[in-house]
Image 1 (tube, each protein chain N blue to C red):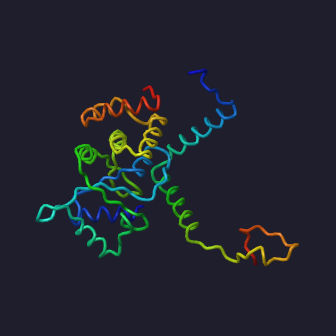
Image 2 (cartoon, rainbow over the protein chains, first blue to last red):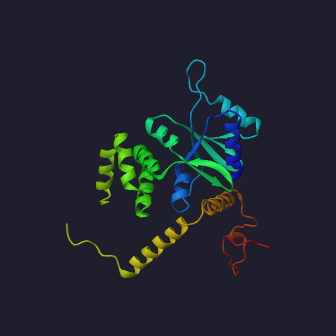
Image 3 (cartoon, each protein chain N blue to C red):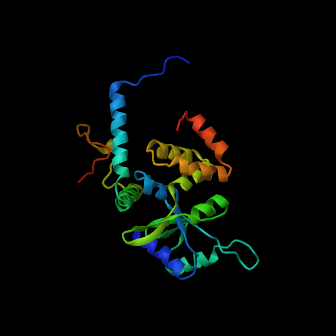
Length: 171
Length: 74
């Protein structure tokens, strides 16, 4: 993972991406017990081509030159399949802007705050997302007072109430 | 709706033990947690890629030889 993060940081230095933030299971692992995952989810701002289309070509070409090749929807970088995910809505934008800077074996990196992770999982709404939210709540790791304004801002309050009702959770 | 189901005490104890185990794991450093995930990934990859060696069909063994199907034959 250390080498993977070093490559990602070098991508910023070399101007391939303007930054990145770790989300998904690896970010959840930062706050909870280790959560099995097949890849490292990395959120970034996608470059637009001259015609205004989203293009991942510069990113792929850069990594190809370093010997890192695509593998399904990921690119394996130093042993970790990395999934590059675009920041495509206001919630992700906020999570990107307000991410924490941490270090991993002295390598700086950025990771989503726990409340944004929960909001994104709720918005995404797959069964595994709901399962992870339950783990966060069970571990009492979420600051509900900080979460609720985020949910309200991104029109997720109703979905949250339904989620709490479905699992009979009283906060 | 009837009476809520009560779990047997030994199950409650087991679940409490598991929750405590998870809490302990959550207190590990990020580096330690990632090391655990990397180890699991290695094991998963090993299980996926390693082919069993020396595996033979029990049909070719003499009748008085009993061998576990995953046991390596020297």
